[in-house]
Image (cartoon, rainbow, N blue to C red; front, side, top):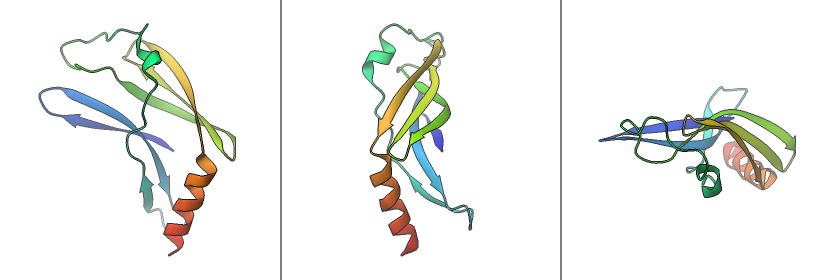
Length: 103
């Protein structure tokens, strides 16, 4: 699945993550580091709430599996509009997560 985290200090910092849950035990077995969002997504989508959030952010809303090695993530960019991007290399990631969860 795709998830987000919020770090609230003097401002709000949003991050997106790939999260994997074991469907038999219902345990979360993997949470990725913050996904690096392409900077080009922020150029034409200015932040609407400048006082609350001081950094560009992507808030994920959906994930679509294209094939065993590629997913498409959609979400809000700066609360301005929807954008999507593709992540590849998912098969290698899932193989690693499954192997570690089995051990």
